[in-house]
Amino acid sequence: MKYETIIGLEIHVQLKTKSKMFCSCPNEAEPSEPNKNVCPVCLGHPGVLPTINKQAVELTIMTGQALHCQIPTESKFDRKNYFYPDLPKGYQISQYDQPLCGEGYLEVEIGGEMKKVRLERIHLEEDAGKLLHPTGANYSLVDYNRASTPLMEIVTKPDLRSPEEARIFLQQLRQILRYIGVSNADMEKGQLRCDANISLRPVGVEELLPKTELKNMNSFKAVEQALKYEVSRQAEVLDAGQKLHQATRGWNESLGESVEQRTKEGEADYRYFPDPDLPPLSFTKEQLKKIKTKLPELPEARQRRLVEQFGLSSDEASLLVSERTVGEFFEQVISEAREWIKSFEGKDEVLTSEAQKVIKQTYNWITSPLFKLLNKEGITLDECKITPENFAELMAMIEQGKVNSSAAEKVLAVMFAKGSDPLQVVDEMDLGQIGNKGELNEIIKKVIEDNPNPVSDIKAGKESALQFLVGQAMKETKGKADPQIVQELFKEKIK
Ligand SMILES: [Zn+2]
Image 1: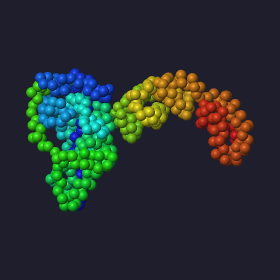
Image 2 (image 1 turned 30 degrees about the horizontal axis):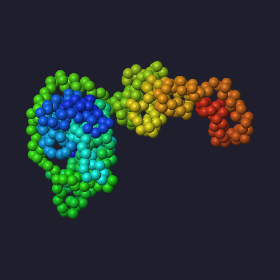
Image 3 (image 1 turned 90 degrees about the horizontal axis):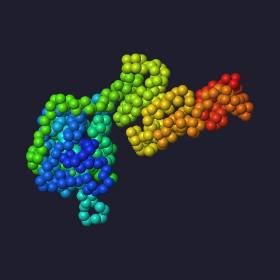
Image 4 (image 1 turned 90 degrees about the vertical axis):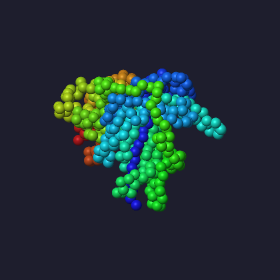
């Protein structure tokens, strides 16, 4: 039988705040020791009073604004009651019927077409601690560093129709979260955690069949694989004429399969009620507007602008907006290079071919040699020592023929390692290009004298011999000549 796949996601995002959600303990990404950042409030001692973290509330509202959500002027926190050893209070402070953000959407490109994935809500809650199970031990350890750190939950409507769509949606969502700076959203580090609700139904049937909630997927690949596995598992059950039941299943990456964990509690089991220790929140329109001004330009808008303003293709622009810092770096380099690209001011002006060339060159040097260095070291651009000023200077030196591209790659590597100024590196390493034709002519004369056979080959029309002579000349100059010019000079001399 043919089935339609229905997927909805619940995404938990660790917010990048200074302190925890309801106390002043630091919210550190990677604390140096267990139970370092704890106090009576986040340990849930009796009689303590929580206070709401304003920054966490603002970051959640900003996320809602970036995702076209309705932002109500009233909101509140509720207690979600359940017992688990990583939850010291015996309840989690969350939001039930009045989340900070209501319905919204994110448009994602799937197979060349834009698809609107609707969001149900975004709410703010506190995270739980972590249980550690030492291998071989008959006990478990608990670490409360993460307990009560701010956690934002984004819930989509069941609008996704395939595992691949779910992965693409999640990747685009992460890009936005990083752009607006609310979270580092690294899945491997648990800063972005995704649960997926998935069910199949025979094509043409309206009603939804019991769904599976999938957990424990800690990479984009795992999300897609776990969902694919579940699609075939559910199809097999239905094909065999059996019934599905609602359940939670954990993804086991090494086995490549999901395992049923428990049948899910209903909402009634959590006995939600408004937290009596926390005042309800209310916002004026002005306050919400003020928060909105903190949003940076979003990736989609920046991509469009890069295409219009710099004449890049949509694919090129998309690579530059993959991370906020990459686009910023590119624009800063171009702006530094404004002096030698005098021709563009404002997007309506047509770019001269020279300006186009410089833009392309900058694009190529960022996305190829620089990206390669970053990947090799496993760091991001904002951790890199090269400043936009120095990068622009190197671009100018290439453009003006002061270094050739193979020398420039060596210079870039030194700049990358030490953060040095390119001009200084060129001097120190003696990499400056020999642009002086007099000096080059001497070398070319010598190469011709030393290689009579290839010279006669060229005269007989054998083009490959020319490359050999160019190679010899490059060797003589220790790679400091412009191979293009050398080739032209040979052609002039050997006729
Ligand atoms: Zn605390």
